Image (cartoon, rainbow, N blue to C red):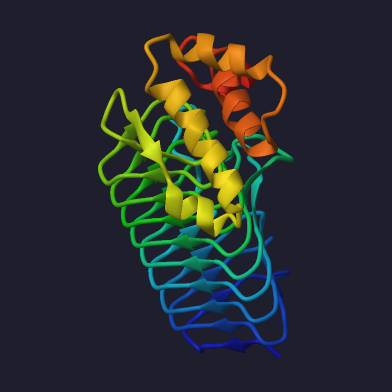
Length: 268
């Protein structure tokens, strides 16, 4: 049976696995489901259509499921939910907002670390093995792919995609898509500064695969021709592996929107 502190409030119909811990002064509202081994430390608030997997830990004063921050939404409007996977660490004062669309979800994958003060806006998708450092702010409709690491106080414009195994330096303000494996820094506009070699290793790429990504970066970003022109030329060549193809595809996709945010093409 779940361990629920006497000062906690758990709504009717909440589904708690047998070994879930709900700490002092927590609030768990109707519609929430929490999987095995998950711990809610003191003063955690979870409400709405929120489904949480196994082995997660929520630190004090984190809030999951609060109304998205849109002026057009009223307290009685129907909204979507949140789906959180397994083994995530949600630190103090993290906020995660549900989808603004009924039947849709904000999605958090597995094995992610969201540090103190991180905000995840409505309709975002976070894949797996991501680290978002203190006070990083993720606007609505963003996608953060596997293995991304954002340093402190990184800001993402809405509809931005951050490619797999990227690294963003502290205080970066990112307003366009970033291809996989890159290091990005700067603020409006940010710039790709190099290849995240630590990310390449974490991704399990062989030495040959890593060298191919580095060579592609040099051709794309250190040449004297426009980035998109070079990317399209390389895309038409044989011999590039799947990792280089992922970089090229990301650059070409982002060019389909005038501000370099591929997901804007699907805006309502």
